[in-house]
Length: 88
Image 1 (cartoon, rainbow, N blue to C red):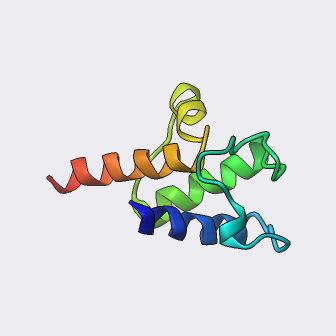
Image 2 (tube, rainbow, N blue to C red):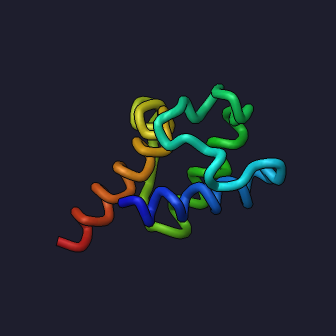
Image 3 (cartoon, one colour):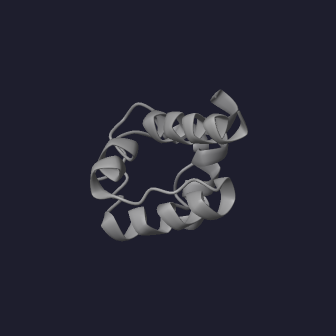
């Protein structure tokens, strides 16, 4: 899962235009939305689209979204859980 976390860090920096950050600057256990990097609800929409496009994982309700986007580790865990379930 560490590979997925690192991959997500790079993608988040790219799609959210966080050019002042390096992947190692993002703490996977820190609050993602509303945290120190200024990620807001508009950014979440961009992340939902990226996750659906790149991983085939849908986040289609607010309750799931709030849980999934709490931290980068939670997001990676959810993607892994959904893709493992689809593969098996």
